[in-house]
Amino acid sequence: MKTENHFTNNQDNFSPGGSSLEKDFRKLINDKRFHDFAIKCSDGKPVYGCKAILATRSDVFDKYIFNFIYI
Image 1 (cartoon, rainbow, N blue to C red):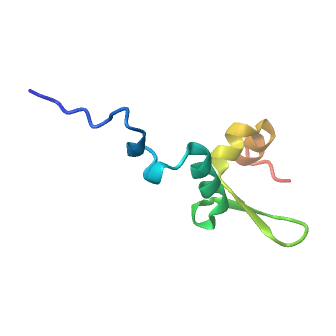
Image 2 (image 1 turned 60 degrees about the horizontal axis):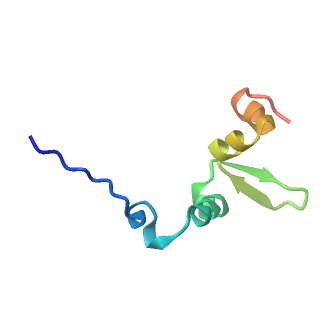
Image 3 (image 1 turned 180 degrees about the vertical axis):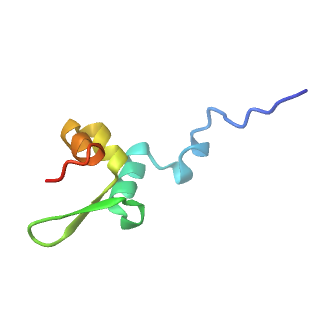
């Protein structure tokens, strides 16, 4: 039986429009459609975020998010 490999080394398959990973993460963070939490700043404006990204980048937020410690 022949199997097809749907993955290639072509970057366009993984990055629509030739966008970079950095641009994709900026879009993920800056677009409120993709957030799963918001932090209200002292000026009243929300900053949107993604729990998975924040927790993997910060041990402090990892504890707050996944150990249910509230600040």
